[in-house]
Image (cartoon, rainbow, N blue to C red):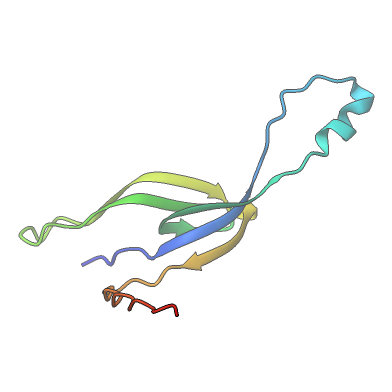
Length: 107
């Protein structure tokens, strides 16, 4: 059986598009605008190499009754790996419910 890919948050710098017109000698100044730092996209890390990091946002497990069926993933986001600044792995596992907070008596 194929394992479910790890759940991650990818932090990356995005490109920008500035629909400005200017004289050629002003282009360098107009082009020096801030990039979009710190974008975050979460999903299942299904592929990563030197060129691209691919996340899937949907996971469909294989049916237990069909031995030939394999899990499927879908709804992909592809981010150029050179734009990725960090990948945070999210721990999976059973989530324990938090105990209710006890009331505090303010005197």
